[in-house]
Amino acid sequence: MSPSTIGAFGIIVLILLFLSRVPVAFAMGFMGFVGFSYLTSLSAGMDMIAIDMFQVFSSFNLTVVPMFVLMGCIAFRIGMSKRIFDASYVVLGNMRGGLTIASILGSAAFSAICGSTNATAAAMGTVALPQMKRYNYDDSLATGCVASAGTLGILIPPSALLIIYGIITEQSIGKLFVAGILPGLLLAFAFIVTIFVICSRNPMLGPPGPATTFQEKIKMFPALIEVLIIFAIVLGGLMTGWFSATQAGGAGAGAVALFGLVRRNLTWRNLVEAAEDTLLITCMVMFVIFGATLFGRFMAVTQIPFMMSSWIGHLPLPPALIMILIVIIHIIGGCFMDGLALIMLTVPILFPTVIALGYDPIWFGVIITLIVEMGAITPPVGINVYVIKGIAPDVPLEKIFKGIFPFLYALIVVTIILIIFPKIATFLPGFVTY
Image 1 (cartoon, rainbow, N blue to C red):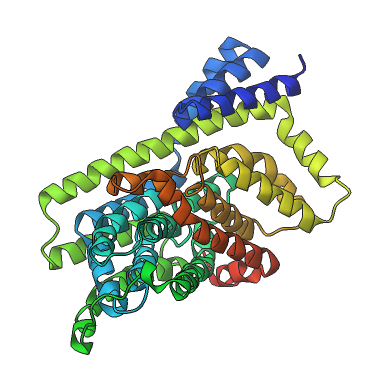
Image 2 (image 1 turned 45 degrees about the vertical axis):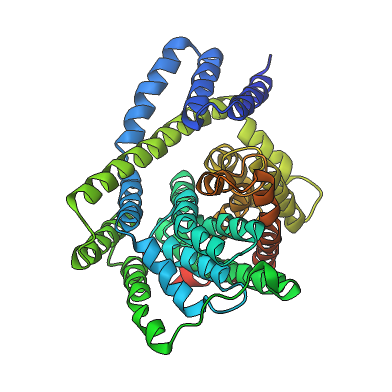
């Protein structure tokens, strides 16, 4: 068999391993080692593992991962997610669908200090769903909203997926973070509009909560100010060049810890648990990158990325239509694969083509992240749906999936807007000096 045929067979086996729920890191690492060794030699394959393992685990660029993960883990342990939701709830809870809108805003705010979609969905789901249950919100709307709102966690900076994309494509993580701000706010606004439409058609799906006084609303603003301060420290430092991406994560984690100390919510136990969570998540990310590196070596030997790039680049189609095809491929792939695995598999293959077609690499990173968000809520993978199912075991799984579809349409609309108006994603990165 030719190297390209072996490469195609390896991709098929890899996808089957993913569908069999083999961990992403092990599936990509195993397939990369076996394929590379088959095409070269066992000795070369062993040497590749040793060299790549050292290069990955000694890479300074990857120090950005534990810093931002630590920031989100400390914020979760000191109850910052609950304070954010409570503040949004007091301000908006007396409107129709107010609790769901509060969940959207709470998720957007928590996303500014947590780069994980699963963690955002879990944090907001834990505090928001009991309140919605209390005020007789429709189960489908409540669970679908919180699961979908969690997707803001991988678009609004800091974003774990944007970090990985930046490392793979050697793009500025600072610019990627800033590029996600306006699209993230646009998506949050689209979700809120979706709720308004749903509750206007049927007010009983999201009945208003109790009215609160102006004084009660004012009292809740310190919780939101905390988030704004942390967000300003991280993004302000990146945009002005005061911080590198790693330093910005460290400064953000320090600021979150300081707020925890001032509020007396940061105990030694909380700090240890946050450190343990950070270690586990960071190790997972590092091993995924290592596995993807091995698989990338295998793909390079097969020449598939270069053949694919040449084939797509010479299609008798305008660049816009080629980009739409790339988007459709990722939407379909996201239904069956974990978002991180999908990015690891496709970006190294398609990125040269995207650049050759004249598209901005920062914009493409935002688009890919936005599309991967869809996979976090669409069946059969839909990891956020299963997270919410664990929080609300009495709600049938099909009811949660039914609830996400209005928000999925909002995601698609925002994607189309960003394709038509790419400046939404590329405007702010122009001011980043790092």
